View 1 (cartoon, rainbow, N blue to C red):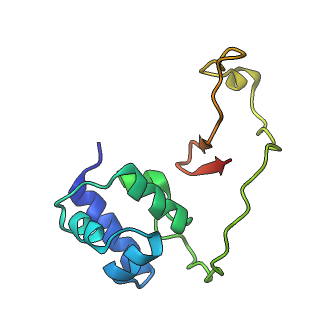
View 2 (view 1 turned 90 degrees about the vertical axis):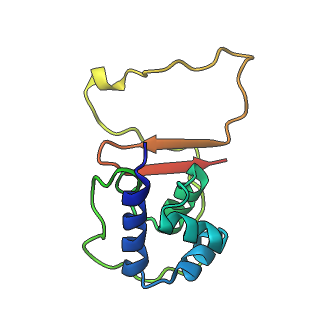
Length: 136
C-alpha cells in the first residue's frame, strides 16, 4: 500500500527537479489542478491512472521509486527537453532477453483458443524497478 505522506514527498521532489509548479505539473500530466493539490496535501491517495500519467509524462521517474521510494531519483543527468511528439508504440517484434532456461518458464497460462479477448496493453516489469508499456 502506498504511504500518502511519503508519496507526496516524492511528488514534491519531482516538481522541484523539473522546476514545475503544481499547476504546471497538472497541465503536463493532464489532470485537474485540484487533484495535484489534494495529493500534495495528503488529503487523497493517488489513483493508478494518476501514477501512470506521471510515469508516462516523465520517463526518468521510476514506477517503483514513485510508489515505494525504492530505487533512484533524480537521474544522474537532467534530461534534455523532448519535443512533444507522440512516440511510436512498439510492435510485436520484441526480443527476449537472454536468461537461463528455468527463468523462461511462464508463471501464467495463455487463454485457450477461442476464449481470448483483444489485448489493449501489455506492461513488462523488470527487476530493477523499471517497466515498459506496449499499447495496441
